[in-house]
Length: 314
Ligand SMILES: [Zn+2]
Ligand SMILES: [Zn+2]
View (cartoon, protein in one colour):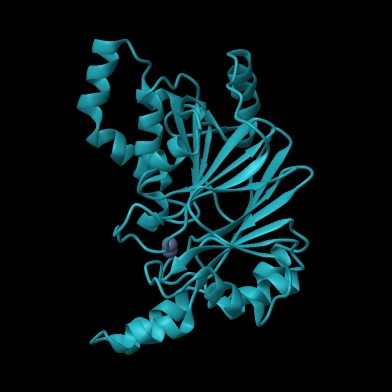
């Protein structure tokens, strides 16, 4: 059993207890098993409502798993008709803000609309500070609403759990495994595999072309992979005074569409889903352009991700 520094029981050993508690309290019907792409842009810059930074929702056997919590995740969940008080698990792939900025606020927003059950936030080292820092900054508001509105203490409902490579989570017949990917300069950056017991969904996280990911995702039903478009990166670099350095950075940390196809092909995944588009705001990059670039190396089914796109998992 893992007990975190706040004294709350957490992680693999603790989840079944709270899982039963949540079920006993009458969980909402979250609808069919599915993957919902909530936010699909790469990078933290907000220039439009959609695509918004990284966020995904998996619903399996009426249990929700949020994977990455970039800015906008709450609004996208509401638009996806997800009842926020049912929030239970959040997994952060790495601590770039386009993946973690709204982790604390998402728990808060669920609480503001009636959350009474535990929320578990899994992330690489630093997840404790991320959430503690949010709670510290919101102390006045949270204390006031507890006293004034009779709410439970949000800080006691939320448990953070730092994970590293290997087994991250096991409960509800679901296991989550992490593979350290390659996203310099960040070291603690991970791909996550959700073995749902019947379906396997893998998220690449942010990574450069990383062949071990193909082994990790072997035979997966769905591989959700980040993607960058080479010609657009070169054009972007050409417009930038430090273009050569910028281009090197982008290629060292992200995966070109053709290489995404190579990973999907070697892994033999049944369905490839593209997300975390870099660039995300170039209107000339239509779905066909992205799909065409991936098609040069992968002949299987490719879905070009859009915010709120739902992919059935049955
Ligand atoms: Zn990112
Ligand atoms: Zn990143």
